[in-house]
Length: 174
Image (cartoon, rainbow, N blue to C red; front, side, top):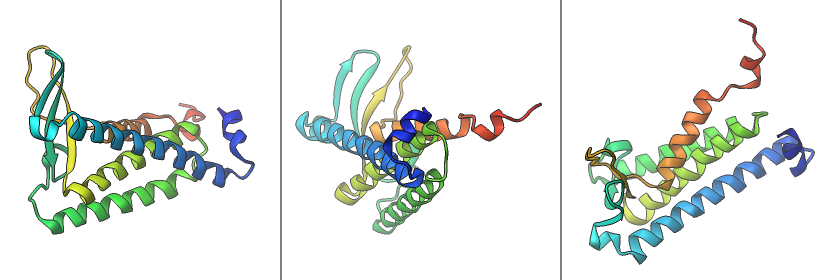
């Protein structure tokens, strides 16, 4: 991994920013293309539901005006603007934290959060809500919630940062 990290440039801060920009841009574009395809080309916004893999994966349209599981949703423009500002501030904070990290994995996880969060911010700006469409149901249990690629990216990034062992705590002796 260190060889990959040195590949980009000798100045680690520029390299970190480049890595974050590339990965978060890829996630952002992938999220937006998936939403464009499913919501508009497959016309999920009018069809409301499409079976992808019966009994397991469905596309179910949900416009989320809040955060996870619809928390803080109230159809207010003020709340939408507040959520946009909070998301952007969190992205900036994560960016500044991430460029100081020495781990390529932590850069990847931070980039996943930034790319996903910005994908959802664009939805709030364009649609007034986040376009959620993925619904996974298993074992006969009904799942009422839908999510999107950005949500998966944010979730995996947060889990990675929380559970990824850093160099400092790997070297500690018990």
